Amino acid sequence: MSETSQTDIKPMDPALLARLTGGLGDMKTVEKLCQDFGHLYGEFLPDVFHSETNLTIEVGYLGFKSGLMRDLIASLGDNFVLADTSLRNWSPNFVMACGNGFVITLMERLLGAMPEFIAEPIKRPLSNIELDLAVVVFERIANVLRSGVNAPGGFEPMFERPHNWEDRSKADADQQDEFGALVHMSIKLGKVTSEFALIIPQKTLLRTSVTAPKSKNQVSKARKEWADQLAEQVRKSQVTLEGRIRLQSLSLLTVSKLAPGDVIPFFDKEEVMVDVSANGQDLYTCEFGRAGENYTVRVKSMHSSDSELLRHLMT
Image: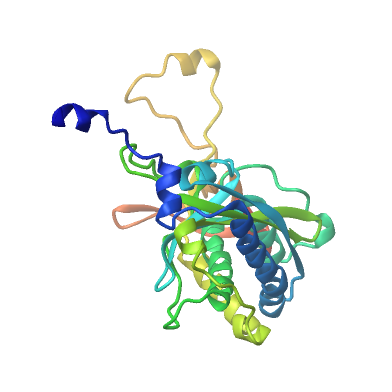
């Protein structure tokens, strides 16, 4: 009888268990807390961006979702960049997400593009340099959060390097997921409107009190610091360069009969010129040469200005 009784016991419904243990709240309570985050960001994130970049953004609250953390992240779609984040004495595992369109548009503006010439970006993953800029964006989003939640100790938020949505590591299927809430925000820069979001475990959210900082200056820093940080991120970014040398033209018949060991002459007779490109964009015209055991190229001319070159490299 004892063995039969034990096998008849059914596991408790995960949602009921989470509600009993403080990991899942009622919709009204969750909605109110998400609205508090929406008000915090709507009030203070535009001030941060304006004080540090002289750019005007508009931030609005779009609503919230409740569900399992992995499902909420999947619901964002593939046009987002994400960062797994922790804040000591508040939450060890929440997620920040930002629409790729905002990062792409921000990069354009910081590189000097006129707002009237910036169109809605195409949906695509962020490049390495854009992911570097996403680090700076997420720092500002995280600092606004830190300034408004009850996290004693004054610790800084810590987050992993941002990654494109499609590059996110797959969670272990056997690992139990927890309930969370998605705070959904709009963010507009010029004519381009994008989104960002916070995905917060409800066990953290339900014990959070959101309060506006006493002064907006507490969540903003000098504009020069932003520019210096962006420049440093760009300098650290790795760019793959490619060289293209024009060869003498050959008939299709000759090409079809080429075999290992055959030689094709360069097109140039004197100085052999090389077109150097990155990300499919021509950057320099160079002279082909050699230094010791290494073949080299020497820059002769640029295809575009410095600002245009950076704009090419970012995509």
